[in-house]
Length: 260
Image (tube, rainbow, N blue to C red; front, side, top):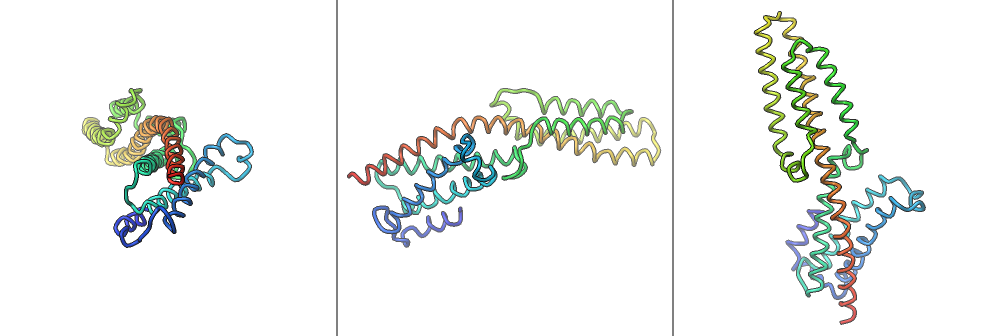
């Protein structure tokens, strides 16, 4: 998509496309129809009739493809240039909705196993985290300081914050996880020296650092999932009104073009 848009932008004067007639006109029609077909995906979620026509994964893939091809064709229809007031409103509405779709796609990949994978749930990650914790407690029961640090880490990850604080905290979290792991390693070395453990015991404990690393990674995923789920809920609220605005401005644009 980006390559075709870049090509059209750089070579728009050489394409000789016009929105009034010929190829440029029909590109606008096809692009508009493809964007209207985007409504099939939300309808698929609610319509019993459409639920019989293929799995949700296929509909989502189609939604993604149409959301890329449709706006690209409309950009070629406009020949990457501004026009009348009503066409500019429709164009910028489309760009806004397309940008919103890209943001939604980015968020979606963080709450699913890949773009088309199953949804990851907080309860599943919580169970994995608890299983990792029990293993670490069993193996490092004589190191309460380390267990305490892991508990603090989990408490910070699942702490309920207001929406904006949660979003602002997300970039800082990875750095905090790194510092927490370094602190745990320091505590481990300190306890090893204090307890004067044998080499075999030291090797066994160092191997458990891998389990601790897995625990920290899962904790980070849990915090990220919590944040991205809240972002996705907000995105859903904003995206549909933007799409309705696009439909309205596009209809006004088509009517104005053919009447005047």
